[in-house]
Length: 276
Image (cartoon, rainbow, N blue to C red; front, side, top):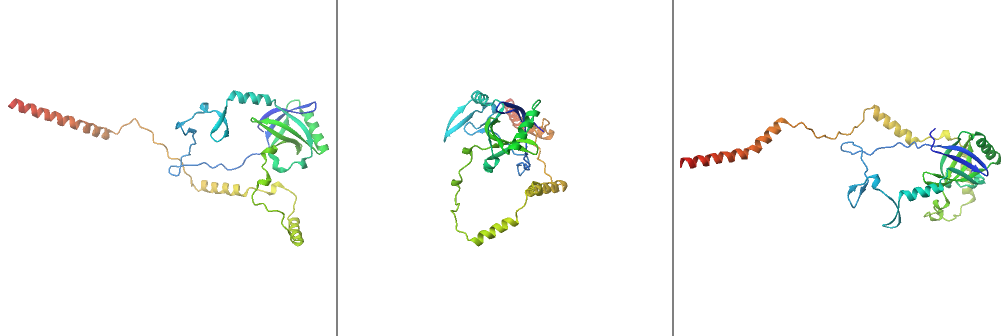
């Protein structure tokens, strides 16, 4: 399993060297955009709309648009310096809390945590302590230049880090339009709804649920592939160094016609002068 981050977990004076591995994977089917006429993949180029030229990566700078059309430019050295100040490759557990206190809306991504060399015993200690206390560790970490709030918990004998959104990243539910106020419902309506919920209640078994759309799309792609409904991009015509012989001869003839007519006219004029 690919390692995406190396560092350590610390709580109190305990330090555990660990590695992070992505716990989930995106299985979306990536579809390419092709030109309808020739089936060539569409290129997306970085073009300056003012200079009307393609811009190379080395000519691009980062900036923050603080108001419409006005920017503060930040150079790479400033950003790297700020990143190094905050990124000490440590996951510091700052609190221990009950998992039930965290609303699922805060959860972002999941990472498996494995112990690095020499960290096995401390890893086992933290895992056992979290299980016994039925709590999770609340921590901070910087991944890919972004500071993340995270929880560390036990999942199937493995420590898992779940990154969280910060509170100001979660939009206010009060801003959602057209949410009705408390509506009066009858006792009969409520009891019937609860009865229906009870009848449909089951234990969560994730293996039961599949991505039906992805499965159907893969089947459609495979049926087209095996049925030879395949397109290939038209090859761009390359300039040839071989010139069509007849065309070249004809062009030469055409170019020489005016010269021959002029020469003939000159010869006729000269002949007339001599005869005179």
